[in-house]
Image 1: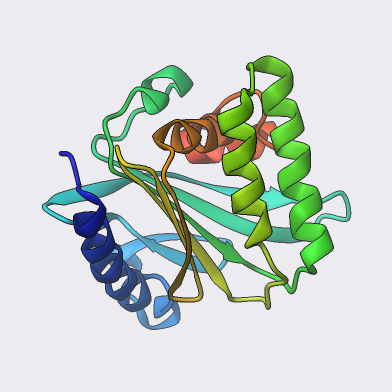
Image 2: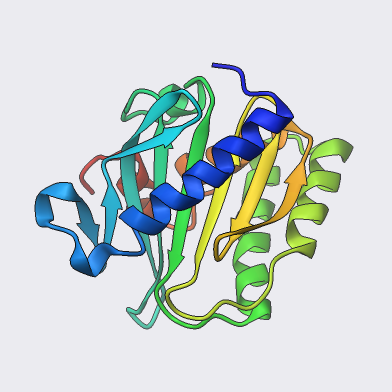
Length: 202
């Protein structure tokens, strides 16, 4: 399904409601209404425009002091469990992250920069990708525990939402592909995190 820019924005508004009712209300949800990971319940399905996305998997970023930093769910049209298959899935896709603890702006940017550096070491990051990444990073700020960040990827580009509000739209669909590849490929922060998003056992 191809979403226009205006269609993507309408889908994002509907997505906000769906996630607010589904994920952020997780403590009130029944076990069969979603997948509970690290105390967060992720809905098994997510409507985006005229497409119902399905939860492919959830990865939890565990830091060296054994503290769960954030949990990320990837929503796709058809769940698959191989990195190449996920990257080749048609859009739209949604990357939903919930911060499990307070995180400073420096810590968040350090994490993204580390992932980005690993991605660019394996893949050729051209000027357009770097420009898109700089725009994305310019809108990353400190997050209080429980804050969510939602990334909607369409054939037109990437929309980023923090705490229920769109903070930036990037008109570069290739950047969306790079974001997904960063989650499921060698650039992922840990193997356990990558396997969680792929929906496979460690």
